[in-house]
Image (cartoon, rainbow, N blue to C red; front, side):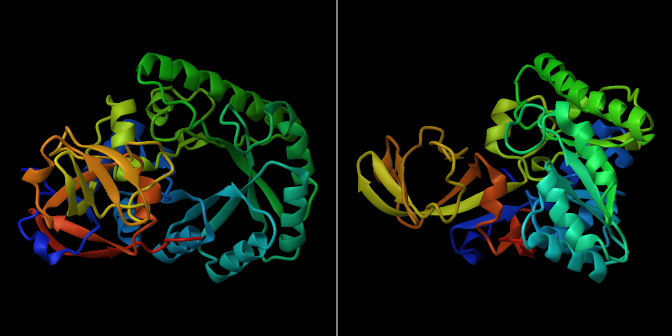
Length: 369
């Protein structure tokens, strides 16, 4: 029986998110093994957003992290993380919020991303008279096409940063989430191409300013490709690897990159709520319960491989299945999300499962913005 087939499902209202601490630990240790050193890892916490999982990462010796929100940064600092990179452009009043965190948690080294002169000018205005300068990491667009400055213009931005008060040019950020080829050899080739863009900027800044900046690279699919590389640019700390989804894993990455050694550690518990006809039923897994940004299927049901989601609203998921009348309202189903990260953000807490029993809850500490 799978770990999530509960012996006490009646203790859990649905929909709910179940988590296996044993498999989370397995996934963390596999990541350390692939990276070959905890010093190379800067995992992203946006997947789990939980103090409990943060503590597990810290217990394995990981001290530097990425996050996407100020709430996640606060969670990390309260847990005692030594180094926190807010991997998001800090604009508007977010800069003031970041400064407040740096003063509230002086033992934690904070950094953030920038990809424009306007962004760092705003940061400088906030941090010019701060007790410590803020670490600024130049966000490079190496193909993701979301945020980041063109590598061709990054050296000029580096010069601009070094001339502003309150700024410490600390590193380069080269997220390559667009690289998710199933073929590992092709994934390696594309990862090498994006990494070459970042090392080109790194070398130019080193020549101009005498600084050897670390480079943060790699989401979960691409980080093993970067980890395999012998780091010709310097010690392991110079290239930092930043996977995130690995802690829980999901059906989406499980299909795209099946070569990675991860186990599904987070599963949805849902119930049948209505039998519509001979081939259609409804379960309580609506938009509020599973990430809905992807086309169908948004969840897969290992126990019901012939179930096909065909419609969804806020609290309902309509499923086509050949034997719908063999099911009854109240029947428990288990589903693996296609995308776990935004699914976690829909829950205040997750149910912790050990020996197929719910043993307690973990708060989703940094849920929301």
